[in-house]
Image 1 (spheres, rainbow over the protein chains, first blue to last red):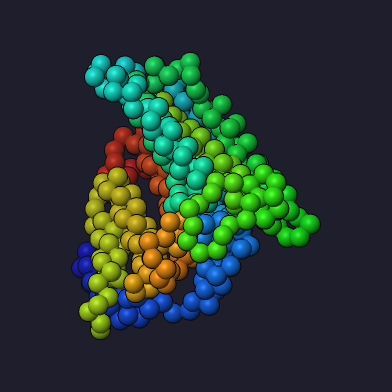
Image 2: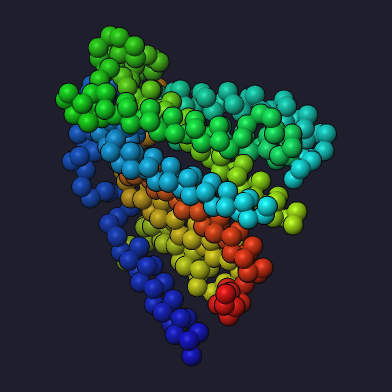
Amino acid sequence: MKRALVLVSFLFVGAFLLVAAASLRPFGEPALTAMDDHFLANAQREAAANNVVTAVVFDYRGFDTLGEATVLFAAVVGVLALFRRLQEDER
Amino acid sequence: MKSGMSIIVRTVTRLVYGLALVYGFYVIMHGHLTPGGGFQGGAVVASAFALLLVAFGSAGIKGLLNAHLLQTLEELGALAFLGLGFAGIGTAFFYNLLANTGSCFGATVALGPNVGPLDTGGILPLMNWAVGLKVMTGIAAVVLAMLIGARQEEAE
Amino acid sequence: MNLGNMPFVAAALLILLGIYAVLFKRNLIKIVLGISLVETGVNLLLVTLGYRTDGIAPIFTLAPRAGPMVLPTPQALTLTSIVIGLATTALLLSFVVWIHRHYGTLDVRKIKELRG
């Protein structure tokens, strides 16, 4: 009974995902491009970088990169703390 | 994993490891000119370290690196990234202080497609180095801790 | 229903495969692999959302032709998403090692039965 319910819900979610992905905007015409047009036009003058993606990651949206660095730091500290506990339980 | 692999693998690793390290540092350094940057170059250097660990075993690199040193270097990288964000606090947080000033990394860029001179970018190459140091030492510490943890578990 | 949207359908199929692996597999390592597949499918969907027809990469160094450029912001957000996926997978695998040491098995049904 429970497996039948899981199967039916999985098929429902699958159909929903596939129909939604096929009915998006046509591939090649993004929706809102005003901010990206500003980045492409002004990145060489303001950030003095040839690579617009790096200028967006570190200069225009540097706060998101700070959050990502914090998540990576928390993950490394968590893994090292867990394995130090495993080492101490052995002794 | 205490002993490592055969002598063919060890010899090829000794030849290839320096090339992989140089390639990783190249990707980090040219992050503001070509595709790449701190995160991608840090992942390349960390995979070179993982190759060294698999070829020589954890006994072969016991004197070279340990998890404490790697974790200290990762914390230094995170603090350097935060300090560079606070450097231009007079105008804004994460303000590009050195762009178009003429000092270190301060040359202006000709608009449109160009060759890509290295001394442009302002504060971007310094941030690339801080994030690259953080990612490479962080992933190396995780791989080393998992290997030593798994080795002690299968020895029980 | 637009048949030119094959890249979006491919990313949705990857997400669907990951959800299947999480729901119907019993080994813990396979469940972790399914979560990693879902993250890969989401990253692919993010990158394909920013494509412009006949666009070139958003890099000015030795650009091949002066055409319209692809949007750079979804690529920047995908970088962040990949690193967060790495952090999640590392912690998940550490928990799997801890569970194996504590229970002696990696079967999800047996872990629910043993208590203490």
